[in-house]
Image (cartoon, rainbow, N blue to C red; front, side):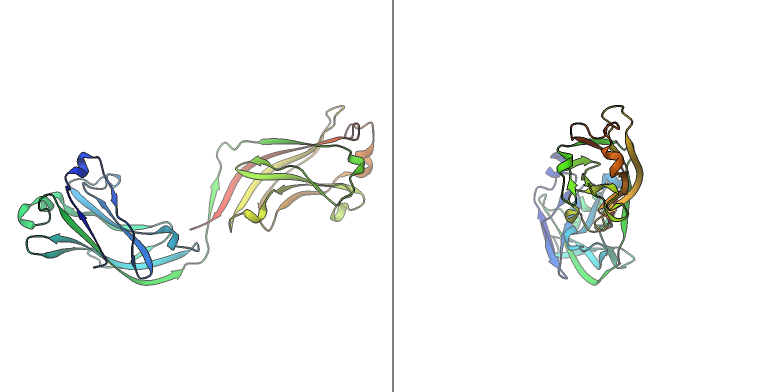
Length: 294
């Protein structure tokens, strides 16, 4: 037997509203397991008048995502009068597949409380009982990759304005705004004053970028609708671009290589540059997030 748990004063579990008891970890087949006991039935499964028993695997053992463990297990209940054990198991005796979406397997109605409390059965003696579990790992394998798409209801738009002073003195290839939050992610505006790609030398290039793409969990993707605006400080006739795109570690910045021509930007009567200062606004709404499925 791989694990036993002795419970003294069993009747006090109900009096203390302890509807679920989870044991400490024990090891079998190179994995960590726990025995889970519902002394008066698993109410989430509408079970009454029975004891529910489950075997649970430690979730951190099921990494990387897609890993799964197949196991056969049995539960035991000690007959303290005759010093032997009642074996409790799934009648199909089939191996169960433990994985990220199914960490527990067991029996909703392992034994009736009537049989458990029957003095002649020897399961409960002086208000003390002993449960046990035996686990055999059959195989382990990776099921490959998967992903979970979470769509965001009532997504909120977040705005951020970046004030760039001494614009005429900008001489680096690119400049980043301070990070700002939108949809539980950190973003920044990236400006190429002399252009990038198709806009090199003729246009200002403007992008929305993930602030720290190296920290993203593997498989994470973010679908965002965003608008970038070069604010007209005189007439409020803002120059803007709007688009919806997927962001990820491999697609960190998205926007326009030819956002606005350098000549048009520098016209003093257009209001984009006032006292050598420009204002760039980002409006970001995150509509969906994709994570690796575990």
